[in-house]
Length: 191
Image (cartoon, rainbow, N blue to C red):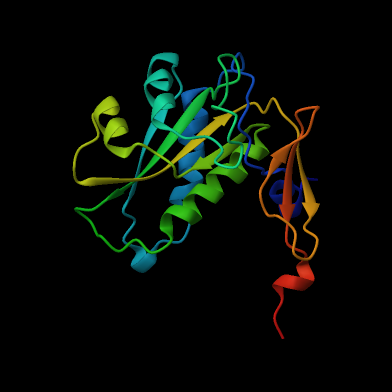
């Protein structure tokens, strides 16, 4: 039986995918259905979503994203390693301009649901928003918050304890394994 802990530990920020593995649109709809069931500040439910599971739309989204700030010599996934699907998370500002953390709750829920389906993803906030708006024809009353890149992971990501005074930047070794330093639990709990 898969536990929540299992899902959380398998939910990494994957940046390379097996692009040949397609993600059906109905799976994206299921993932948004999970997000729909989550908490929303004052129950306003202002989040809306653009779903992309086709190559043409994916190719319009991809150049609007930045992929890994700490990997300065890596321009992002190469053809064949790009996401098979995207979910663009929007706030409908005709409903409210105060969405608190709805977008983060929804995005994490979607990514956990993706892991349960054998997929992986990356929550991307480094977006050329006006370029993406134009590429997808997103109306002005929607604020672009996040893009979730989804697909079958084609890389290994490992967590490591961050030593005291250590560097928090993720990195890749010679075997292309992606290492992510995490602060120790003892350091996080105060008092």
